[in-house]
Amino acid sequence: MDELTSYFNGQYVPDSRCTVHVTDRGFRYGDAVFDIQRTFGGKPFRFREHLERFMRSLKYARMDPGFTIDEWEELTLGILKRNEHLLIPGGDLYIGQYVSRGAGADALDQAPLTVCIRPWHLMPNQWAEGYTSGIHGVIVKTRSYSPEAMESKVKHNNRLNFALAHLEAADVDPDGYPILTDARGFITENIQGNVWVVQGGVLKTPTDRSSLQGDSRRFVFELADGLGIPVSDEDLQPYDLYTADEVFFTNTAYCVLPVGRVDNRAIGTDVPGPITRQLQAAWSERVGVDIVDQALHYKPPSEGVHAWGAPQDR
Image (cartoon, rainbow, N blue to C red; front, side):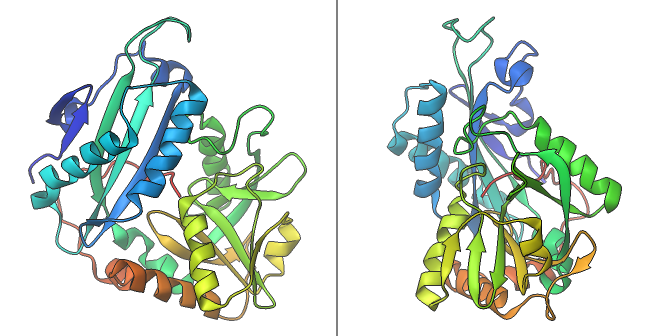
C-alpha cells in the first residue's frame, strides 16, 4: 500500500520522513505534548474536544507553535483528506498532533519547535477477543506520577512509568493491561485508558487528581446521563475492582473495553456486563459504527501497512 502523508515542520511528507535528531528535547527529555483522535467510518469524531485539551497542554508547557485551534483543526482535517483514499476497508485512522520544544540545549533556548501531525492505521481486530470475553487487568506496583510533580491533566511525553507498568503487567500475563495507583494506593488509570467500575447499578471512575481527563471519560458521562445510569468520580481502591459487578476501560481507540479479570480474579457473572453493553451500544449509535462488530469482522491486510504503536489516548 502507498505510504500515508504527514505534516512535519511546515511540509507535507511521507510518514517515514517524520524524524527528529537525537538532540530534540522531545527525544532527550520527553519535553513534548501531544493528543490523538480517531475516525469512525472514515469520519472524524470529537476532534474539537481533543484539540481544546491539546491547546491547554501547549499552554501549560509554555509552547506556542503559532497556530490557533481553528488552524490546528484545518491542518488535521486536511491530513485526513489527503489520506482518505488509503483507508483500509472496514478500518479507520488515528491522527495525532505532536509538539516538542525542539533542539535547544535547555528549555530557555529559543529553538524552533518541532511540530507534527500524522495519521496511522487503526487495527480494530486487536480488541475482538477483549470485547467478547474481557481483558485481564493487572494492578502494578509502578505508580502514577504525583500531581505535585507532574500535572495529570497534561498529555505529555514523560511516560517511562507507563512503559515500566506495561512490562510489570506482562510479567503476570503477557496480554495483561496494567492498572496504576497513586501514592495513597487509590486506582488511577490504565496506561492507555480510564478505569470504570459498576457497583449496584452505579457507574464509578477515579477522580482526575492523578489521572488524565480523558475525553472518552467525559463522553461516557454524557452517555450515562442519556441512559439514566448514575455516575460519579471518586477515590477507588483495588477492593472496589475485585468486588465490582463490572469493570471496563475507555479510550479513544477501543471506546469501551470490558475487563473480565483483575489480578486473576473473575469480575461479575457476565462479561461484558449489562451496563458495559449499554454503553457500547450507545457509543456505536452515536458514531454510526458498531464498534464490536467492526473489531470482529475487520480483516487486516497481510502486508504493506504500518500501524505505529498503540495509542495512549482517551
